[in-house]
Length: 391
Image 1 (spheres, rainbow, N blue to C red):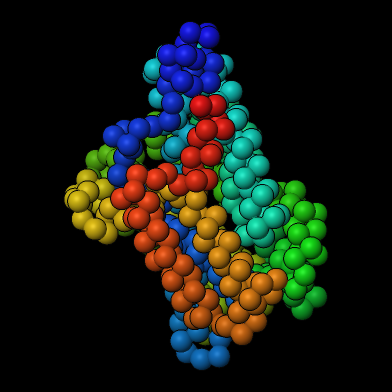
Image 2: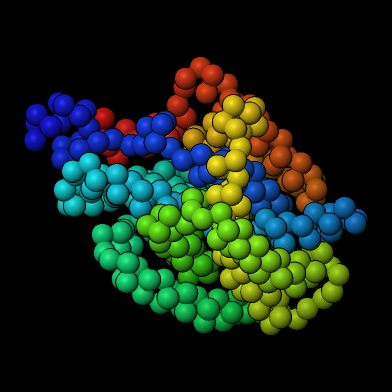
């Protein structure tokens, strides 16, 4: 084993390291790069509590965000997570790594993602998904070593669980918020202007944040879908006709399911707490179809675009450093919008928040391209690889 470590340069028992640049698929990196924009647009207004707009522009922004952004980008990220986990395990097993060592590698990835998420959520104060992705990896990682029928059974059970749970949970939340005068969008967010108080709030709420993401958002299902897609060469690669069909059906379901909440969010009609809760659950459930549809769209784009195009190279560079720039964008949103630092969220409405998000994404795009030209890895991505592969 010592000789193996000397030969490979990786942790004892691993036959190889992470995917090389030549092994990386274009479509997932394009998707990650573009979805950072979707995540930024979705998260920025949450630091405002998504206030009611002062005019038609704010109402239009809310309408478009609910219809195409909110709970659409995160499912795609979850699909990409599951897809990447399956590909990582397959690469190791195919290279000759023993199953027990592959499981240890997977557990290390889950643990360190959880740790990164803790730092991001508690210390930086961003709206975090890393901790939940790490927790999910630890929770369902064993399925990656089981046969397809076990995976499909797990997908069906999780899907039925959320179909019954989400409407009940969100109707209850809507009634609770209506009774207290609070907003669903500001739930779990600290309004303190003190960094110490905000950090303590984030520390105490950290485990509850993970539990709320587990039971209030259908995020486990797209991770499992991503694993299934990788095993069956679907969504990000595969038959073009199938991808076109999936893209059309997925995005159509997403738009139809998100329309009631979008109309309500744009104040085009007013609904009761019960209906608002049902609309929220419907928007989330159909957002899974949206994430699948978005993945299929990038699966269609990947094979036909040129890797030499400036926009493609920039998106790919950003996608290859998605962890670094996810943390960067979230940190900058906290700095610019939260009351702890500059507090622009106290004066901006939805439109201003979206402008800030787009500006930060373009900044990330330029930084990623600069790093690509200089041959630099994303610091957070490189650190995670070093920790999990022990190189």
